[in-house]
Length: 111
Image (cartoon, rainbow, N blue to C red; front, side, top):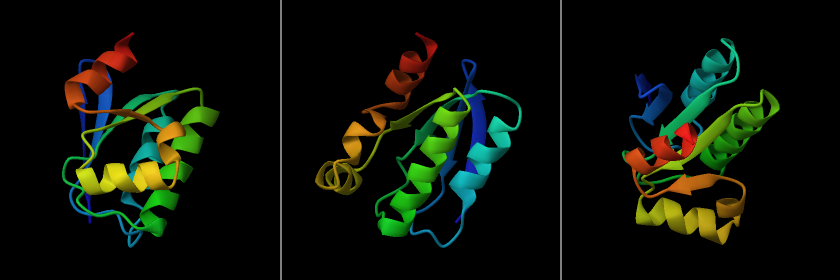
């Protein structure tokens, strides 16, 4: 799995290219790299992610914790119904800020 990192309206957008199963630490590595430049506003575009397991959840929790410790902000955007269900079941929907669309997530970070 890899990630695509871009910038849109002054916000960093990280887009995983596949499911999040913890096989690689790509999302965490991308977040760490962005935070090396200082506090960052990051949208994690979850639209390509159709499946996530506990290892993938752990990676996202670590990434979000790093962003919070660096006084940045991270919003998850566009989760699939399965991923949304996992976040609700694990109560992580209260730990992450989640938006239904990429545009909405970017707008939240610009306010």
